[in-house]
Amino acid sequence: MIRFIQESDWPQIMAIQSDVYLDVTPESLHVLQKKWHRSPDFCFVYEERGKVVAYLLAHTWSGALPKLDTVLDFSVSSKWVLLHDLAVSEPNKGIGKSMIRHFLSVVSWMAYTQIKLVSIQNSASFWASFGFKRSSGSVSDCYGSGALLMIRSES
Image (cartoon, rainbow, N blue to C red; front, side):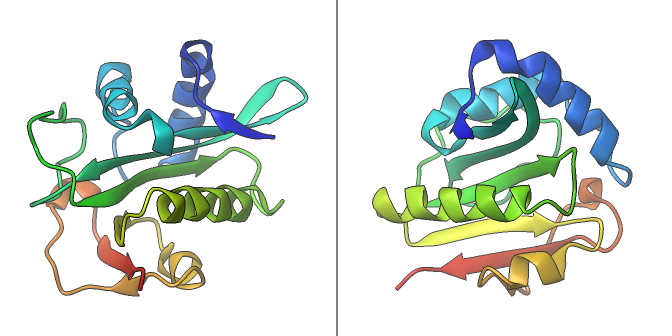
């Protein structure tokens, strides 16, 4: 079941983040919660039998991409959506795909026309299957080697 993030989910979210990210240093709880506070309508968990097994964090933004583990500046305007993080503790079950389809429907309903993300850990083909295209924009070194900026524009 996909639902909005709740305060009680954070210990499980932090455990998932620690388990799945191998190429980047996990972000602090404080930083992740600030992303959630900025745009709670774009932040979800996938719960299975009472346990959080995946999460998706996204927030509105404009301008240069924020670096990892940096608290967001809430004065930045909201021109597009940055899909910051999708992490799944049980891969190959279709959970990530379900989360993305749900997220895309929310973005469409909220009338945003552009979504950006940074593809890490060789995930570009996954994102391309949802219509994200590689962009020539630059990505901070904090995202690790091979990180790519990808954009999906809605018509």
